[in-house]
View 1 (cartoon, rainbow, N blue to C red):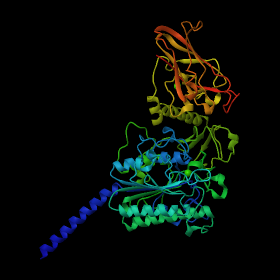
View 2 (view 1 turned 90 degrees about the vertical axis):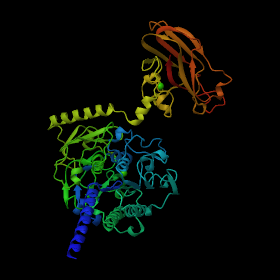
View 3 (view 1 turned 30 degrees about the horizontal axis):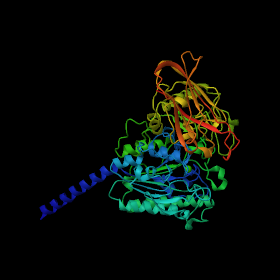
View 4 (view 1 turned 180 degrees about the horizontal axis):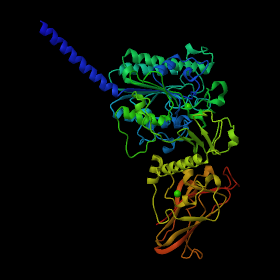
Length: 613
Ligand SMILES: [Ca+2]
Ligand SMILES: [Ca+2]
């Protein structure tokens, strides 16, 4: 009997051992939850010093986890920031530098390897509940096609609604389940979805991304939160987010998952300060959303992982959402594609209890809507361009500006004159970053480049007698006529428009080449005052001075009015002789004809490509 009892205990002991090791294995590849606030400022949480907004759950999360004080979003704008978080790349690498609108034609490119796709490849079940904003409602751009098993939420910002925009859909997966949902219910619904998902998948590894609609304007607190905060409606919605975080943590606790779940709370960009008291606060930082001052991109960031991250740790190292991509995929054991450039650092050690570990020092770049604005390296931040939605020009708009950001987080004291060597060093970093970016066209550019068709005049110099209209000059580039791009979706980037003028173009082939055919495409779209030329003359020359007319082309006048689209005018008989210089003159008919909307006014010709074979 004694023997049997010990055997029984040994059996139980072995069983427990196995349980422990299974749990241990799982605890090294944690569940991951990212709670992503929209436009929440650096100063908007209790734990980040807000005097009246009460955030007990986030404060507790920080006191049990790690609070970051030098953490940046990838951009001061919604779409670009989400792109950085989910792809680990500077938004400029995607061609998404700012914000997408409901009518934008583009969305996240299918070749991007999203954080969710990485998680799925690592065997995780994935879900997104909230604001997507990485493309319109076109299916290929939506979460289910980009790594998420489940989706519920608004496809873009909660202010892109009637009367300015069409009805906003609430999506379940790829399907619209209602229009213009009551925004008061959004935070609650996203929270409930997350909790259901946790409960349903408590035995599978999971990744949940909750990009809240709030506190982006219009502010809509849930019924129970209306009028609750001393900070007014803005405080109400932030306190509801805090409630949401508390409930998600509670659900993890109830499912015994706190010790193998890494929870991250962070904001997508700084506060919308031009909205006055409806916007948040960046605390001691300058400016807010839309700007590359600290207030635009330094955001609250709290990480919690019971038993791994030591309680109440403070991290002051420079980190960003780009690093989350790299580090989270590393934590779940997923390799990232080697052929793509990722911009994040590996900060996974900070989540594994090695919080005092010094992380890799890599410069961080701040991008505005159109260009690179600033760099941070170590304690230094250098601005080369500045902007603010408030239209204020700090430091009279002068650059470069240099700040010791650790000593002067408010960016008050410009040290550029005092430390010219540092300024130069940072300018060089910017230069090499720019060159590296330029050498790597984004996926859209790559596709566009691959669509080019080479011909004898491809990328050869074109001299124009009359300049095109500045609005339709195809990016100020006469080479657009020989760049190999023919009419695409992006019509007015590839076509060159002439208002009331002829097009007269000379092409230098750089050496004598056997020319068999010359052709040039023109668009006709009469309702837009765009007409085919009345005729096109073709010339050739060996010396670039004496030109011989070799052909005249006109379109059948019976057909011309009925035609719409791009049509090519081409030399008819085979030329088959050697020439270096070619010339094309296309005659604008001058005034729009009688009976047309623009009768008597200048009409346009729009040229596509001069193709030489
Ligand atoms: Ca935002
Ligand atoms: Ca072209």
